[in-house]
Image 1 (tube, helix red, strand yellow):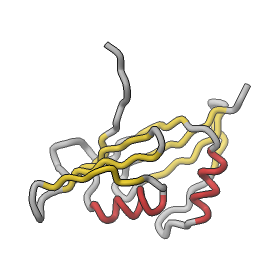
Image 2: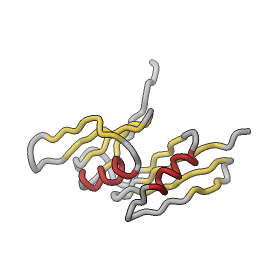
Image 3: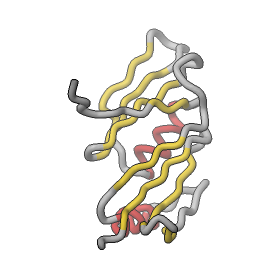
Image 4: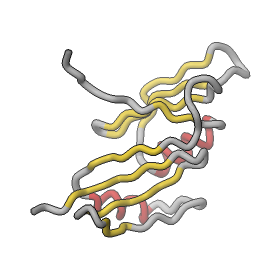
Length: 122
C-alpha cells in the first residue's frame, strides 16, 4: 500500500459561515459541494495548494472541535495575507514555538483548530 493523501473531515454547522472563514478569509477554493436536496446538510470539499478539507454539516460524519496541524513554507506571507484582509471574528498572531518553529493558531466558527506551522531552518 502507498498512502497518497490524507483529507481531514471537519464538522461545520453553517455552510455560508464556513465559506466566509475558509474561502473569503483563508483563501481556500471550493472544489465541489453536495446536498441531497434543499434543506438538507451540505458536504463540501475545499482546497488551497496541497491542503484539502472536507467540511460537513452531517451530524453523524464526525465530531466538532477537531485539530489539524499543517506544516507549511513561508508562514510570513500567509500571516501578511491574513492581516491584509481582516476577519471580523478573529485576530491571529504569529508565535514562536518551543519545538523550533513559528505557528499561527486559528479556530474556525465551529471550534475546529488549525495550526499552520513552519519549522526554523537548521
